[in-house]
Every structure is written in structure tokens, then in C-alpha cells.
Image 1 (tube, rainbow, N blue to C red):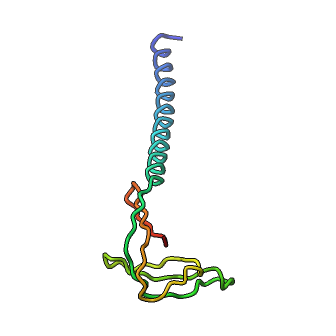
Image 2 (cartoon, rainbow, N blue to C red; image 1 turned 180 degrees about the vertical axis):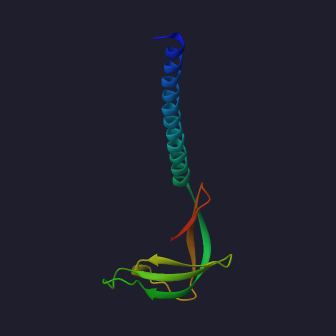
Image 3 (tube, rainbow, N blue to C red; image 1 turned 90 degrees about the horizontal axis):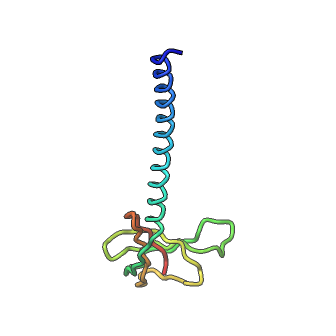
Length: 113
């Protein structure tokens, strides 16, 4: 085999290896980014927010004792529905405190106490 042909063949082999290594490195970086996003979303700061109960309706399930859907209006004017246990017995106009879950990614969720 001539030296020039051998050089071209070795170069083609190394280029293909570099391509596969680049693809593998790219996949590793994407996975690391996803893991970082998931871990950031799992760190949560809990904040109590005052709210007023505006409506109470049954949860649409076969089991009537499953719970209630409570519509609340937060102090900042947002209206949202929360699922609660019937034991809490919320009344319309009742002042309650809702727990706001502030995730490190910026996502906010709410729960009943």
C-alpha cells in the first residue's frame, strides 16, 4: 500500500471515530442538561398565600366521598381550582391559606394547606 493511500485511509477512519465521539459527547451533554433541569425542578420553596373560597363543587368521580373541587381567589387576584378532602369542609367566603410551591425552574403550583 502506498504511503499516500495509507494516510487517506487512516484519516478517514479517524474522522469517522471523531464523528461518533462527537455524537456521544453531544448525547452526554443533553442528558446532563436534562438531569440539571430535573434536579432544579425538584427543589421547591413553600410559601403560604392568603386566599378566599369562591366556589365549592363535588369532584367528578364514581366515589362521592373522594373529595371536592374548591375554587379560590388568591390575594393577587388569580383564581384557581384545588382538589381537597371532604373532611376540610370549606365554605364559600372562608379565608384560607394556600401553599404555593415555587420551583427553581420558575414553575409555580398550589396545594391546599
